[in-house]
Image 1 (cartoon, rainbow, N blue to C red):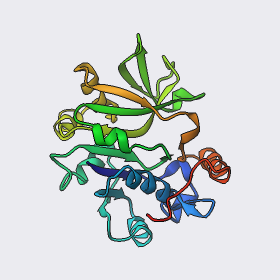
Image 2 (cartoon, rainbow, N blue to C red):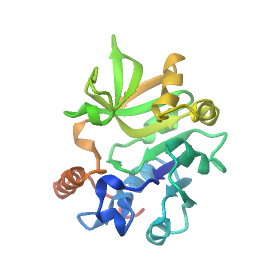
Image 3 (cartoon, helix red, strand yellow):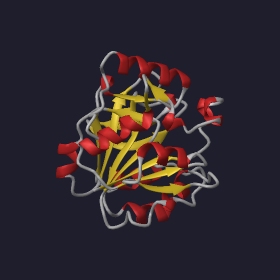
Length: 233
């Protein structure tokens, strides 16, 4: 299992702060957001990590260190193009794909150790499902995913954290040129084949830090002891 942290793009939802630094380096009670993501990934037993970053990638490198691989996204061309930049060295292996706005302290070690094939989508219930990718559930089974729907069929948000088997890249190749591509186009392939399932992280253990409001909520959750970092990492 290897991990790819997707941290490219402009960080436009966090302007003007992201005019000067990368969004993953914004602090949560004294520690950058990236520290929380890395802690969860490493605690799950994943040591091979690639970070895709924008023009501030050297700032991430200076903070995180050289035990992680770095890929520069010079020009943001969407999620598919960003992921393709990290393809070298990450083929023929299961992947944990982590969109960097998200933090959770859920213990993923058991889930990752027993993972063999298909796709796992981390989810949680939210009050604003129109702002997220949403899992469509019928008879307790996930049957579709919708990206930021105007009229959400459920409030089960997909949390920007995914586990994919080694067929991920061929699936990405087949859909990345489609108009308005999203990662949901890949997960939908797994769903059609009955090879995807959802895993709830619980309301108190996952948050999107990609907006000023989310950042404030995350900082309070850290202050309340809901997110902790293993200092040995």
